[in-house]
Amino acid sequence: MIKVSETAKKKVVELMTDDGYNATTDYVRVGVKSGGCSGLSYDLKFDKEQQEGDKVFEDNDIKIIVDKKSFLYLIGTTLEYSGGLNGTGFVFNNPNANRTCGCGESFSL
Image (cartoon, rainbow, N blue to C red):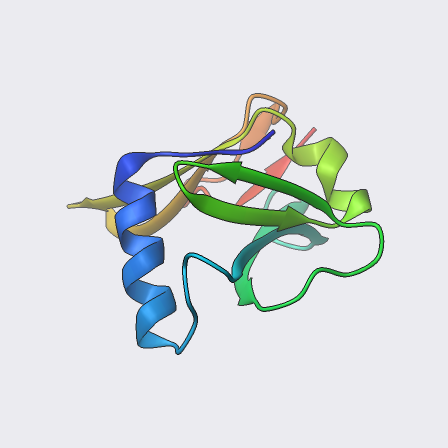
């Protein structure tokens, strides 16, 4: 399960609308890929369709899809949005990560 904070929800809805997506019917695709200064990095984009093997979640009225490979890395993660002085953007609070980089965009297990 992936959770979505209230601030992340507002930003997701805003960005989806700006990009021509509908937050009530389309998805936020969250994944993990190799790279980043800690070994793995997060990938977030919008999608209109599920793929075979995707896991589907809904939290705080946001539909999330995760590919099977990324799912194990993301169990229990909360998607947040930070607009503070340290930078703006989405933040992944991942309880599975043993180490994260300073920018919060990559992690290792």
